[in-house]
Amino acid sequence: MNRFKSPVSSARFKVQAKQFLRFAACWTLAAQLTTLPLASAANSASTPGASDKPASKIVNDPVMKVMQTELARATTDLGKKRIPRRIT
Image (cartoon, rainbow, N blue to C red; front, side, top):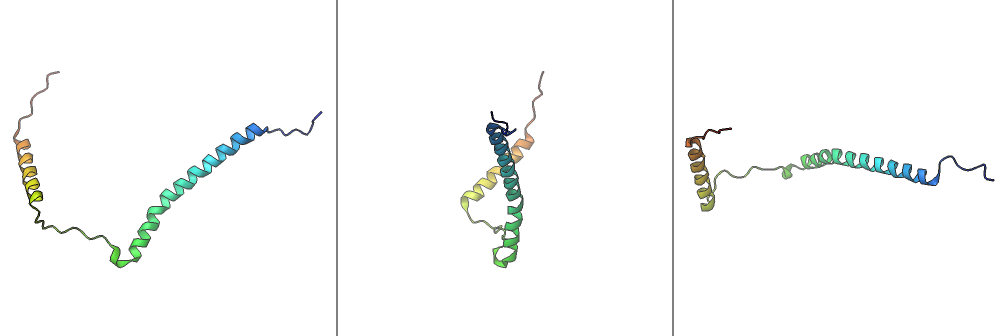
């Protein structure tokens, strides 16, 4: 006769422990994802030479020039096209 049996069985305890660990892991991950960008921004702001610089506007690449002219041509051609009516 075992009158001192625990009211919480070992299976129930394992389920509760797993749920608690999952809950703690979720909040830990959320805290890391929230604070990591802030910490990264603080580190890059402290070093003056690490700031991002914009790329130069002048491009001497012939492929890039051709691509830009084709893009401009396609944009103007699309603006001239007539949109067909949809019959529904």
